[in-house]
Length: 101
Image (cartoon, rainbow, N blue to C red; front, side, top):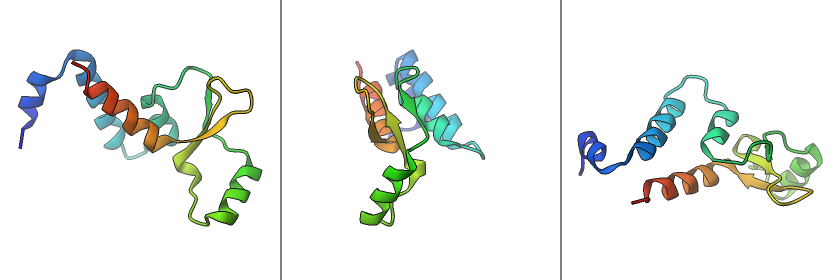
């Protein structure tokens, strides 16, 4: 298993910055959905952390375990928007960023 100094050699500057930002957010006592959304690389003004309450209620009828703190509304290329899972988007963005060579 690699140690932290090995990663320092392998990562470029933008990758190191992404890892540091992630660690800062994850180790904060007061991490918010907005903090996680900043790491997701959403285009400015194209995402809203608030969800329409009627959507939430209908989803919770089907899935009572649905949590609003893990989802946001994205308006990327769509006039009405769509629901996105913030954690999935964050993982996808980090995976993409850290696999750059």
